[in-house]
Length: 293
Image (tube, rainbow, N blue to C red; front, side, top):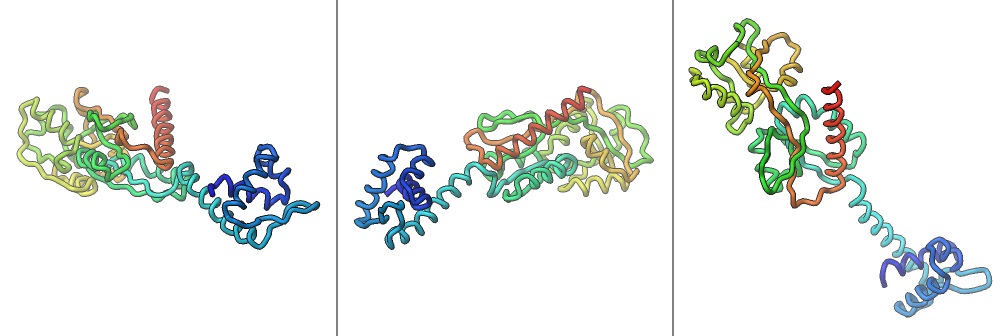
């Protein structure tokens, strides 16, 4: 018995006619009749009463139609599981991207695909890259470039980086202005931290102190309190409307950063991930159009 036999059987039972079943299935009548006869021979029982008014189910046929309906329904559900977005989708993101760009994106995705069980892990880029490589995340938003043979990446957004301080801080015009400052940084592995430290090293500057934070909110709070200077994405700084931070520009060579969406090369995207990637591609395209205009 195979599921095609059950489809033929179900169609004949529904229409009470081989002719109408054949029309629905787009087969010749003899093919339908052969399938039903083969099924009856396999089960060693008659499934239909054949008379001038058509075909009606025998007691054995009524038993089989119960199972056929359930089996074919499960087959459809199994097929749809690989077509309609559903099930888990595990994503990762840097904190600034999660704070600025993802709320509206995730809301739109959830409204379109409510059956997807979406989760978001935040962290610094190196950590997220490792989690994608170890199959712990389906994809992640990280600061690039990302050059790894097992990963594929696409540009999500181009960022401008700025230094932030408390409002009363004097304007920072060069790396030398940071010589006597406390530098507030995210955990080791943060790409923004690496870019700031690269700039300071290139200028021969050694700040008096570094304070390390595990959350962006903690870092921002200490900047507002006047404890030091930090480097963040301009989009993130712009989101803060408290009036408690001051923005300072970075040199051209160090003020640009690109956020990428990454995933493994060897993982076949699920429908949930495929539709999410389509959404972020549309977002990135719209972002580029706005920038160009």
